[in-house]
Image (tube, rainbow, N blue to C red; front, top):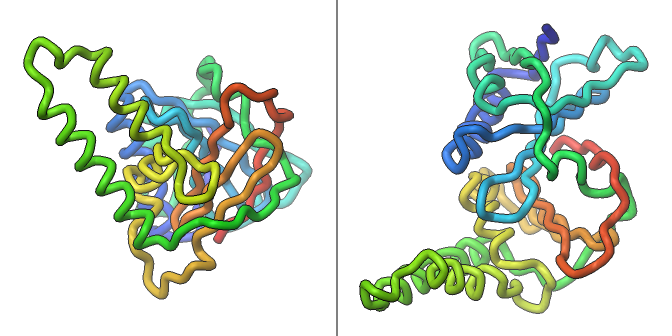
Length: 232
């Protein structure tokens, strides 16, 4: 089995926290791992959000000692979490699993352009809080006979499909970032830690602790490939 040596215990703890949050939404969650050089990208799809979450993890040394070898595997998130050793700052790559459909459609390798109009972190966190409050209020007002799964889903889609300010970013992407801990306040947080990019039909929200990528529906699929790894 391949053992990944992470940069330090903090990186191991952050990886474990990310995997735990994914498993909270789907106990059978899978993640796709891609490593090159000293960067490891962990891709996951939190159930119900219809987005891809990306957590970049720093490695202590170039993967395979800098040889022309890269890691690209889809594995069980639960098995990977069990293998994380925070004290030793290591994680063991589990046996590969048959990947879900999303694992074969990752954001494009390059061509990312900055998108203007993204509000600051405090405004985004407030936006998610207001959306959650609205959802609870509207569903709470429904009579018992109308509280069907279809009606709850309809209200949810209406709220979470709204766009953020003048951008094309759906609110569900910000909700996913908040739920996965990507938007939690960081020491010395600045607007530079938060940015929105586009490439083809994809949008990517970069937050202090990870990124959320969403492909716009109803448009031609973007080219497949690996998201370039940039550890912050």
